[in-house]
Image 1 (tube, rainbow, N blue to C red):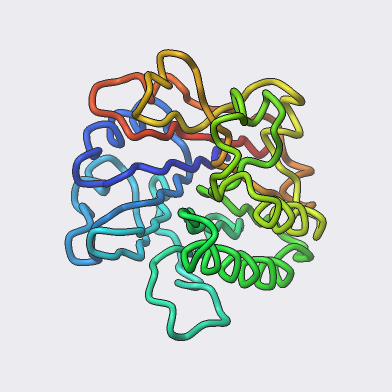
Image 2: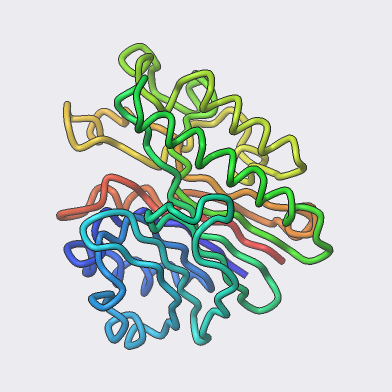
Length: 258
């Protein structure tokens, strides 16, 4: 079972790239983030014509997450994290596909920091940690996929160079502390687990020629609970997608479970 995560950075404008990638990679499940479209304007027909059923949680112009399943319809479990009924951001969607619980996550960016956006990021992260605690111990596979907007370390495997990013919300100690507290529940960072210190970037900013220089960051992650981790066979990044015409600034990341 191949499960992928892809921040499309606007599903309307990136639809050709998304459909192209689905046809080439053929993931069994694809978690999408940053749809930037409302529920009513989600391109359901185009996705279905590509062979995928979908569940989505949209928001006009911002955020938005979806779970696609090849030849199936995801069974939606939860939209939105518990803990803040006033939160209007569409950032979390949880579904079941073929016995696997899968969440599509778009964690807040948090910039500029310090400030209210960073405070919201940390508060949202705490809600994710609390909810993830209820999922990690399940006897069935659980995969938490998405754009976490956290660079776990300053190592070259996670970032080309931290020097120009030291003030960014993605590298702050509070962001990283939340990330490692989440992992400490018992989640496996699939890409790092299989690829060690190898650079496995998933994001290259549009500015300063960063794609051409491979000046990337690893911020899209797939976390596996123990039953999922026992089935882990492969993981990777479809980095060539980032180099195509009018691409997202992210590349899809994926795992294969046996």
